[in-house]
Length: 349
Picture 1 (cartoon, rainbow, N blue to C red):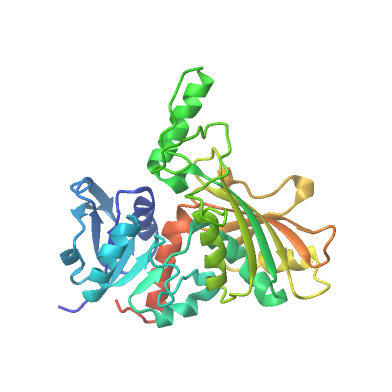
Picture 2: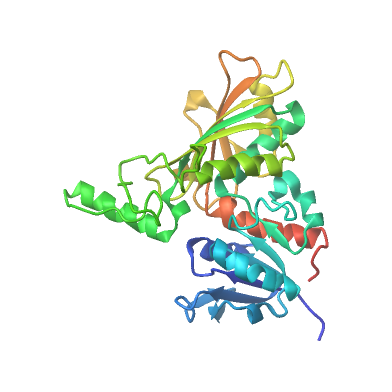
């Protein structure tokens, strides 16, 4: 029988990002002949409707990848390390949404608007970057190409959905408890596996993931190292401070950059970003128009505003960058990579 489309698998199909992946595939025109939904034993058996057909979620195991063309992984790093090589052995191209392979020198780390060409040297596994990194490099890449880039300092204001569905439920429950004067016990944030947890409702927690010996958290080091790798700039100066705030979906970032070219103006940068792929410019201070997480939910783009020149450094600029962390930060970027693989004829339908 002649093949009439791709066989796509989604690993972690019942999780927050996995569900978004399925929904994103539903909304796009990727030619899918067969969709296989995979999860842990705990979630197997659930039913999901895709393009009018009810599909049952199956237990993810090596044999699940027989005949699969593209496998989108979002089930945790340990699952990816165990099953991604098994999928590749069986002929699948893996797009992995965890941190398991991101800094592996043999694995391309890809944001299609920035470094789509890196897909050409993949060895079966392609890494999807951290959600906060993705939205930042989409906005910075046009600036880097036009004016050069010397330094990046970013402070993030990250939504709780980045920590998973349980963190979202904790925010809802804590907010209700605080408003009604009830007691509660934090159990998830800042890091689920740690012994110490803090209130997220009406609070800001300056810790995402575990602290490293250098004083930065693992999330901050992801942003630093991934930005350098994606942009092919090991010499780029990058610093990050990552903060969890009581927003359900949509990461925000305050970003300071220094460009190499002299004489650049804020209007030059606005003009660049107005037509940049994947970017929506929202920058009209007089009208109080700027990006906000409440407005970005459910949208694939990266929204940029508050662009202004630094008052002390002629080559310094400030930007405000917002995006849906479950879409461009995860599911949409993964599906975009799949679409790029097809476009570049690295997989065939």
